[in-house]
Image (tube, rainbow, N blue to C red; front, top):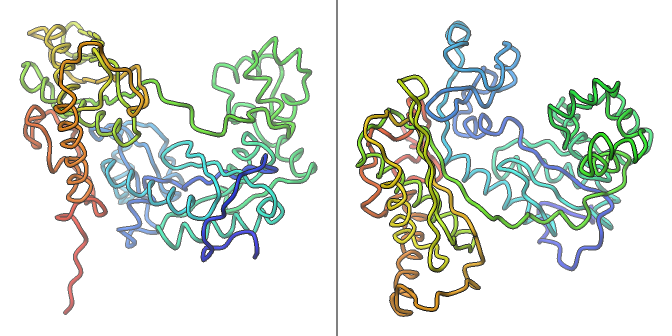
Length: 439
């Protein structure tokens, strides 16, 4: 195959406007990550729980066949889980993030350009020879990702991203790859696709369209532009044009620049005192700052939100913000700002169940606007930047939060997210690597 192969170097050159879009989506991603290191569970029902082991957020096909729904609280289906020997995992976000990076790196090594849409999805523009041989290209992507990462993906290919989403939905039914490049195929797909399943149409709009007699994607796309814009605004019109095979999101394939970054978690146990609450806020701030540096960004302000339990007395919710004199991604400076906000919000008495940190006014760290009277000298700022780089390098090599600032407190504090059934972080922690024995 001349267009792409798993043994070929990355294709070079500028990209003309794509003829087709491919959507690569990992199947049951969280479960698939667990099965890479637990192949003995293949064929058995497996589920993954949300933070604090609350709700089911991923299911294997065998678990879906048992009628276990997405988002259902674990305690409600506990009898089904026990009766059918369902393997239950706590969310292992470190593992999932690393496996996602491996999948995306594999795709980026095979294609001239990819646009990551979520932790387990990426759009890929196909033009020229890649578009002409789209089915073989999609098969190669699927085969190579499985071989190099152990993750099974489905690939949908179509003239627009909205149709590629629909094609991917078909591919997940067992085909693995679906290419919709003929008008007859597109018409048949739209006839079978409920309007509520169309990418870009939410539940409220789907209910409105159903009331108006629009039941499937074909009926929706066949309405006049005036009718669609009147009932669905300009966003609905773009979706309709995409369903007709006309790219309406041209020039928007690149990720939108971030303006905010949030790290928020529920606590493993309720917190009443300020010191452990401050440790949680400092930890969330450090994680947000690390993400900032990885993205080459700096924050111009910090926000903090705390919330008490909804089930113990009167609920207490509070939030506050602080703008910085100059944008930064220094963990220490961001923690100092976040903790100063927290001290103004904290009230003795409530049992706090959740906290979050918001970094806003994000800018390119290399082109930030400096204060007229900076709080630190240029030399001190350079030293702090070098410290952050060294800390990130050590944590990448030795594992997450191997090196961190003392404000974050102990790693085994009770407020940390409860993960009673978490699997080993087999790709990011040295002491959790799988062990092989020769007998």
